[in-house]
Length: 211
Image (tube, rainbow, N blue to C red; front, side, top):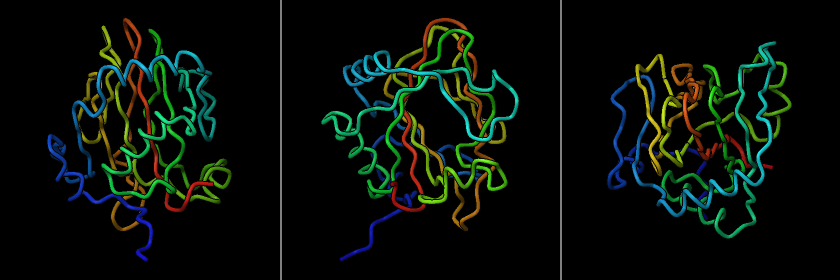
């Protein structure tokens, strides 16, 4: 029996019809429009609205406004959420057991998540708490669920890439490089929403099975 796959294949991702690679040597980053339908986006927005709570961060840095969004832990036992989880796995080739539960995020006007990486700081106070069992985050796949009236783009400063929300658009990137080291070039800023609301869902994968 083959071992479960815990790493995405860029070749597999690029074989997906419609997917494009962001032209940079510093990260494996892809964009795929219409990963989710309008109806699927609306259903996920409703779930986020129904069960949102204040977002948190690892390694608090004293900035109470570093991350001001709200978060929703999607119910993985739900058939619709489980089906979405299967689609993420089918897209990237990573076995589902290496994935964290899918999260939703909601940003109201003025809310943001300042420049951060999705991987955990190995020197951070919370590293052991978050990584002792399942290890470091390896890949992120984020899907925008709606268009934002103003603001709300995701800025990858090092990669010189600004990504604007569009309903159903997926963005994926490697938090860990092919040599196993973390990839600081993936630092990104969920910029302030100026008008309207912004909704996304995010799927993170780990080095070892999620427990």
